[in-house]
Structure formats: C-alpha cells, structure tokens
Length: 377
Image (tube, rainbow, N blue to C red; front, side, top):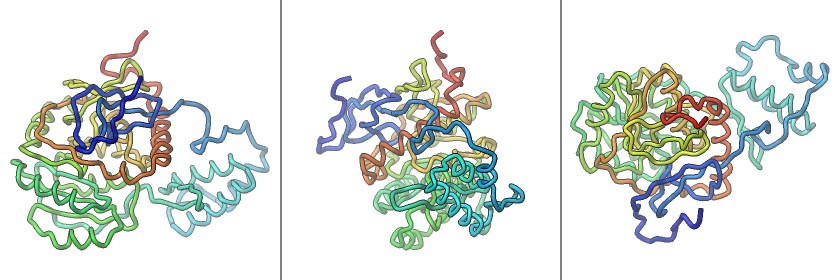
C-alpha cells in the first residue's frame, strides 16, 4: 500500500482523498474513518474471523458434565440472575475463579449469563469489572416535542462541545433541541453544563460512565425529536447542515443519512469512502435517523464500548429491515481533532478496533446481500 499517513503535519488539515477501509492494518485511523492529521488516509479495520474467543484464546472442544454443573452453581433460573448488581458481582467473582482455574468455557458461560442480565465484563491487566449494557432509567423530564434532536456524547474537552453547541444554535434552522450526553465523569463538564441554560438545550449525565454505544442509546431514548442527528463533538457546523439531512429522511425508504458514506469493495472486510447517494453505511461524525427506527433495532450494539465500527454496525442494523443508507455530501461542516482517538494509546486502540471488527463480522459477515454493489460471484 505504501506510506499512507502523514501524522506529523502541523496544520492538522484534511486533504481530499478516497479512503480505503480494510480488514487489515489498523495502524492508521480516522475518527469514524477520518483523521485531521492524515493525508490520503486509509481506514484499516484489522481482524480475521476465526473461532477464537474475544481475548484471543482458542475455543475448547468441550467439557464434562461435572464441569458444566459447576458453571451453573447457585443458579435456579436464568430469570433475574444478573439483573441485581450484587448478584452480578457474585457471578463475576465466580468467573474470575474459573479463569484462574483455566476453565475458560465455564467462564464464557458466566459472561453470557451476565450479558443476558444486562452486564458486560471488562477484562484488563488490573482485573475484571462490570459495566451496564444499558443506562439506568432517569427521571422523566418534561421535554417539548421537537422535529429533530441534535445529539452528541461528551467524554470531556469542554472547548470542543462548546464550539459544537454554538455552531448548532447559530446555524440550525429547524425546530430542534440540542441534547448533550455527559459520559465524561468530569465535574468540570458537569459544572459547565449546569452553567448553560437554554430553552432548546438539555443534558443527560451518565454516572458512572458507560461504553460509547450505551451512551448513544441513552441519548436516543431521551430524545424529544422524531429524528436524531448524532454528531461527534469535534464537528462544527458552518451553515445549515441539518435541513438537507431531514429532507433525505422524508423519503420513507431512507433509514440513515449523513455526509460521510462508505461502501464495501465487494466484501464486508473492506470499505471505502463513497459519495453515494446509496451507500452501505454512514459514519457517525454526523448521521441522521428516525428515533422510531433506532428503537426498532434496539439502537447501537451495546457491546461496542469503543466507538470504532459501531456506526457501520448500526447502519447495517437499520438497513437489514429493508431501508437505504444515503450519503448527502457537501454539507457545511468542519471536522476538528477527534479526542477519543488521540487520548487512546496506539496499542489499546488497535486492540479495541480489532475486537469491534470481530463483532461486526460475527453479526454481518455472512450477509454480503446487504452490500449496495453486491458481492462478486
């Protein structure tokens, strides 16, 4: 492929290019497919589909009945097993013990039981911890119905969200609300949000912070608009970028629209930037969809704790019901630095990106029929 990155450019600008989204070589990144410091960038989503577990272990061939009984010790029924956090913590402790005993299949079964109860297990060098797959219910607030909710998830970096918010209030021409999901666990962000008051501004604080997909889903559930437009907080509107998106969604066959579309190159393992109009997926820099459609597919997959590839998977969820993804290029938008990418170490973002790509292929790897251009014979 040759050298494709110019990460040292000081102006942090983007130059026009056709980007390639591969299933290999995750060394180069773009926020949801782009990066301000990369020239002629290729998006790489490394991973081979195989039978390994998420942590890279090969699957075992089976276990004896005695071991299976141990894995289910203490469970009289599946219902409610992990819905309570204290019960979930007990299961987590049992899973840790199983992993230490190298009974990995039993540990995997416990993980699945936890997921059924609404908990994910996050393994790291420091140990294992629980994270909710769904945001806790918040007290209902009287929000006026709107035509569109402009939604962003914030992980810190107040100047970025302030710039986004100012651009939204300056340029949006529709009946809108701005909804900020605070996933930062930062008291400074909380204080900043409390100091901002406007009729069309609402915020939702997640404490403790949750994964990217779960945070987005919390915003979708709280949205007062018929349509949601999800923005990366590093995006800035320089004109009315919302009206063309709503116009695209007037077509009942369109389920997701946005300025940055991608199409598979005859395979689900390789995508490239495409001007559309019909594309395979819309990148979450800016993606518009109906709230009802998102709820019908249960939103983003909550297993996507890291943001990468979650947008592609969500686009496929929406399109699997028969709808179209449509690119609306040329909108008045400026992409600034993507903070989550910059704040994550290269090794960690490579690992998390691979994991998300495995998840995508596990769900959609046998659905080439969803490719707009079809797959080669």
